[in-house]
Structures are given as C-alpha cells and as structure tokens.
Amino acid sequence: MDMYYRSSGKVHASYAVFFIAGLIPVVLLSVLYAIAMYYMPTVYLCFAVTGAFTVAAAYTAAKTAEWGKVRNAFVGVVALLIYFAAFTYVHLTAYVAVVFRDEAAVIDLEWFWLLLRNPSVTLEGFTDWIVPYGVWSFTGGSSSSEGTAVSGTLLVVIWLIEHCIVLGGSIVLFNVFLRKPFFEDTGRWGTERTCASVWEHRPEAEFGKIREALEGGRLDYFGALKAADSGGDRFCRLSCWADPFNESRHVYLTLTNITVTTDKKGNAKTSEDEIVRDLIISEASYRQLEQMAEEAGKTEAVEDVAEVE
Image 1 (spheres, rainbow, N blue to C red):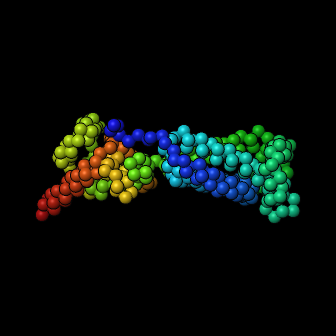
Image 2 (tube, rainbow, N blue to C red; image 1 turned 60 degrees about the horizontal axis):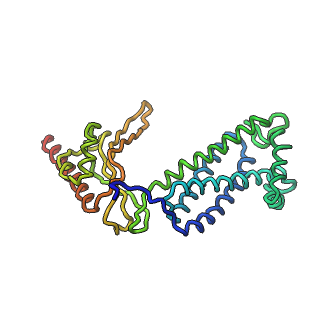
C-alpha cells in the first residue's frame, strides 16, 4: 500500500450525464460572451470579460468532474478541450449573428440557428468581411468609424491570444478548483482541516528527519517542537484532507512551512514550502499531532506570561 495519496484514475459512470449537462451553461455563456465582446464600449474591458468567462467555464468543468467523481487527469483535460471546442464554435457563430444582425436589437437568433448548421457560412463571414475590415478599435469598441477598426493579421493574433487565455486559464483553474483528494473507501471528496496551533518554522535540514518520523509513525518526535510566536510571519502549519463525514479511518496529512513577507506598499505575500504532502495516516494519529501542537501553544503562552511577570 502506498504511504502517500495517489489518484486512482477512476471515473464514475455518472460523469457522462454531468458532462453533457455542463455543455448547456458553456454554450449559453459562449453566446453571452460573443454579445459582450461586440458591444463592449472599450476593448480594454474585454480582458475582464475574458477572465470572467474563463473562471466560469473552469468552475463548470470542475463541478461536473467533481459530481462525476473524476480522478483521472487525462479525462479532465479531454473534457476541457471539448468544452473549449464548443465555446469556440458557438461564440464565433454568435459573433457573426451579432455583427450581421440586420434589424435585430442585439443578436439575430434566426440567423444564429442557421449559422450553427452551416459553419461554412460563418467562416465566410470572418474571412470575407470581419477579418479584412474589422468591427472594433482599441478606443471605440464596436462603434469605431470605418478605417480605424483593428483588422487583418493583428485582429487574428489578438483573437488567438484571447483563446489561448481561455484555454490555458481554464486548465490552470480547473486544477485549482479540483485539487481535493478522493477517499475511495467512502466514495467522497475530502475536505481540508487546518490545525489552529502552529509550530516554529522548521529548517530545511530537518525535512528528511520529519518525513522519516511521520512515515515511521514516530509521533513523539513532534512532542519536542516549540510553538511559533503568536502573530509571527514564519511558522509550520499542520493540516489534512479528511472525509467530510469522518467515516474514513485515515486522513491525508500535509505539513507546510509558511513565510509571510510584506513589500514596500504594505502588501503581504505568503510563500509555502511543503515538508510532507498527502501522507496517509490514521485519524487517531492526526488527532494526536493536533493535540501536540495545541499543547506546545499552551506551553508557549505560559512561558510568555511568566516572562512578563
């Protein structure tokens, strides 16, 4: 048995249903994305629209994968690529229906449905009209006058960058949203628990000894560790992933060195250096470590009071 959590690579059969259901919000958001990008008063706000769509799409993909109990990274990436393909096809089609909307107020829906069934017409709209002549400028959005619109190679490059942001950002955020480990024995995703008490920041030279102690079940090693100063900017944090209903007999332990730095503007930046990540230990052992950290904190508090007196 592995000492550390490893994804099983399994996918629940229900994911097929959740994946298809996830296409619905992706398609709707893609239409709204096309409308927003055309009517945006300034092109610089388009970056905000692209970012918002990326977050929404990644969250949708992550939630459907979570509901479908996807523990397979390859399946997750393929799902994202399919969602991205749907986004590209739908939003480009909707964009043409917005640009050539005739008397429609916002988008010609009848024209949009026709274009969905005839991608060659959508392609013609871009190659013969939109790309050569452009429909927006850097300063005036879609209302720019003829001759000032961004067009040609520059327009294509900007759109390629935009789509790379959506795809790359979705992949990164998907992994962030779905970083929780899965408990195969209970069939549930874990929830994170963080110990309120912290130890002193551990030197890198001790990392190996700490890992050996944890892997060997020698918890007495941690009884001698001191608590970090209250409100300090360097400490060692104990946390774990556990079954949300505590029905599993084990947890996935992580021990992390935390360093908080402040720049000249007063902005705090936190850096983390993981000593141990997702080590499988018993629930009882983790509770014992929590108790050791809490007792170290109480001892530190008593010593501080004694020094004041």
